[in-house]
Length: 313
Image 1: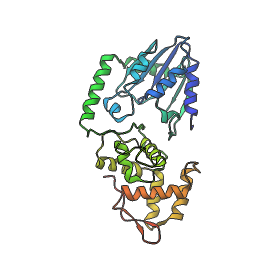
Image 2 (image 1 turned 45 degrees about the vertical axis):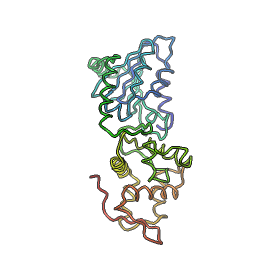
Image 3 (image 1 turned 180 degrees about the vertical axis):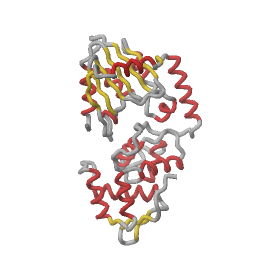
């Protein structure tokens, strides 16, 4: 499912709750949990349990928010629980539930671009083993109190303090490196300065700045990286893209702009945001910027040539 279909599916599920809602996901963002809570009828008095992973490094990396504690604490009959090894995504309202791959984040549920390709399947809670799994989960969780929240906040602050003290924009990412995405920012050399906050909308063309923000949200670099760490992180994310792997293969013998645009055309699936020739023009700049020793443009021919194999090391 794409766009807002998954999110709407979850909202429809919880809006029918009369007695019990259970929301289980390793990553929970504050905007997403607030949207789900708004869909749960207050008048029904349903009890709400939210289970998340809430590791300190998850907070530092921006994949889960400390602020969800306040959202949940402010709701009557709601409790936040912590399970450090959680990976399951499970959402139940009374006797119906959704199970799949989607975290409680905007990108996973189609509420924030670029959206992930996720799956949620509706099941009956009487399915063999499902109730036992839920019971086991709840028995192995610990309730999150204000004291525990403060401890996790301090641990996250200690981790963040070990990284360079720079300001980066808020980013959101999930743990799947093979997502379908192509860069839109036409100036990859400015991406790091947007990430650190050194460049903003007042110092860049508005569309380029917005595209840079969009690309950073898609890539999800952890906060506080040095420029060297940032460049390495983006390079690894790029080389995992299917479309880049296709171009890498073709560029061993040289790939022209026309050939590359055809390669990328199927990948972007006639995106309304960008045409294949423009997508290739930008991707080519990114590849030369993030792999400067591996690619060159043959003078006068606009043919990308691969010098040596991309290495993740």
